[in-house]
Length: 461
Image (cartoon, rainbow, N blue to C red):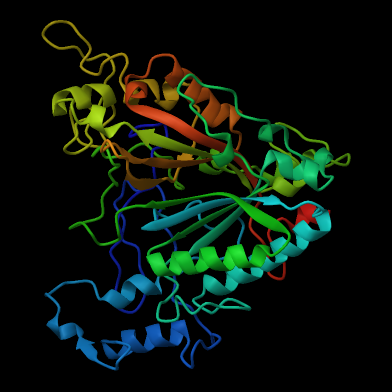
């Protein structure tokens, strides 16, 4: 996981006083574009979320519910004002859906829905319209279009993103089998799989991320309520990452094994980034010559979209933590302290796979996760990892139910996730300390244009 050919986009973010400006490490693969919401928002309880935020930022005060004021002058010199965390904003409309290239968020919810009996294409289209309208408003810091719970009334957008996708079964339920992409074929079985089918797959998928837990929960409740009688929750998972500003400077995130996790993620600045992560419009358009025809990239409605593989990977932490730090580093192939390869250098130094020690043994073991998962060892296979850690409690025997909500993005899962996972399946030293307990694959269409809803080109095409 720490050096999966794409490890995560995880960096902490340092923001300014009145606008959220992401200052990420040069090695960070995905520095999100954030702005402060503009225009007049809908009021919640007499004061809109965005107006409350902008007022606090302008005056240098944070107003409590009882009217008490805390001046920023009382904060330590150089501290980031609390208001900047809430002012971060991602855009709903765009070429791609939000929640893919943005940096890691502090809180996440993954939820899959199944259409209810009798619900079909018409009901699915109405649901996606509702979800899109809700996402657009919540991502600007406004109240939900209807039935708002008021949970986030005091907060700004907090970099909230909502992302929507379609599972393999969705196309059967809606009579759209001819529009189902070949790339959405079920994933093969792997030796590390111990899958709970009740927590896998699904007709529809929603990914929610934010830098504030209440903002994220508010969005989760709004999505669930919008589903109405058209869909029911199949499974739902909660995750987290390190909060922005928690470290002295922006750096790659760590996972629950304590390993730096995200060093070799593809970067939007890479010349082939879009080719590897997103379905190209030209390929999709070329496949639209006959109704529903598909190429390896997908049908026309998938233009600028991506495929998300979702895996709930339990970390066997009791076993892992019995290893010495040296043994842990041998499993991963990188130093635990700073993520540098065992062959030397810093976190971003190219790994020397041929370097040997005084005994003639490879410094980076042949079974090391970082060695096996490298793109150049997998035919160039790459994917953009954007995971969340999770902790679902402690069993009676003291065993923690914790690990990684693995989410990765690619233009073709067969050439991305499947290629790499098959290689890991054959000898990755890390496999002994993890267990894949849930799995899903979703087709995530491109972003919605102004006046459109997500998936409109599929559902109304």
